[in-house]
Length: 98
Image (tube, rainbow, N blue to C red; front, side, top):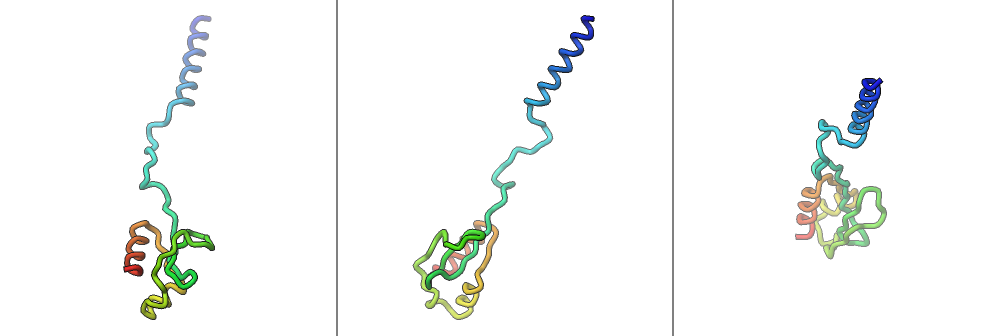
């Protein structure tokens, strides 16, 4: 009888450990594993602006007038330029705003 009680307590302890201890084979989440939001750079009220994914209003509007840019840049901004990383966004903003 004592062996059955000890066996049950042991199994109970194992179940509790499995529930409350995190598994060792899962890598901890880091910023590199998170999905980054896509951004689109396009014209907004005559200025260069950045829009977050699926947003109608810009998250940032720059003092750069689209009319002052070369024709090819104006055409690109009319279509919108989508980037997937913060580095690409920063480079594109620097290209358009000087």
